[in-house]
Amino acid sequence: DAKTTQPNSMESNEEEPVHLPCNHSTISGTDYIHWYRQLPSQGPEYVIHGLTSNVNNRMASLAIAEDRKSSTLILHRATLRDAAVYYCILRDQTGANNLFFGTGTRLTVIP
Amino acid sequence: AAGVIQSPRHLIKEKRETATLKCYPIPRHDTVYWYQQGPGQDPQFLISFYEKMQSDKGSIPDRFSAQQFSDYHSELNMSSLELGDSALYFCASSSGQGGGTEAFFGQGTRLTVV
Image (cartoon, rainbow over all chains, first blue to last red; front, top):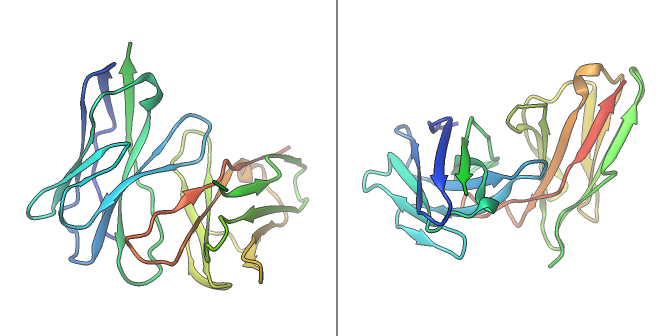
């Protein structure tokens, strides 16, 4: 499985934008980039995913580098409820496509 | 909207006992995944099923087995429980296996082995 690298932790002030980076230099052409987050004591929650183009949804935006070797999850206005561990995961278009969680980024939101 | 339902939410078992965890996927989802998350750890993939057939296997101990039934619900059977099996067990479901599909997770079953 292709690997991703994320910072262990990040901090953000409430109501400010947050940019969570992810490096995936060994990404293949058929890998989708997925982001999930896990709030304390809850199951992981889908945030967003993309293949080549930038993506927006009600939760966040995903900016994908032109060479696809890195991506950034953007939370436009962090709230206290966004404090969670964020996981960047590559998921192949073919095969079993299981989600393999690496070590994500623990986001702390400061009031 | 209906979510992934796991039961029970909490389970306490003694060493060497058996446990069965159940997962009810979102309606019309045909793929189920099981994960184990120890204290302070990231979720570890155990096993997955697609259309009632095992599709992939991760770090699942031989003492564990799982299956997906005709109604697409899944059960994880754990035998000869050990203290180290104490963890949160999550089930997720998705529609199909394509890399562009999102998975939806249940709230988990917290298993405590004493």
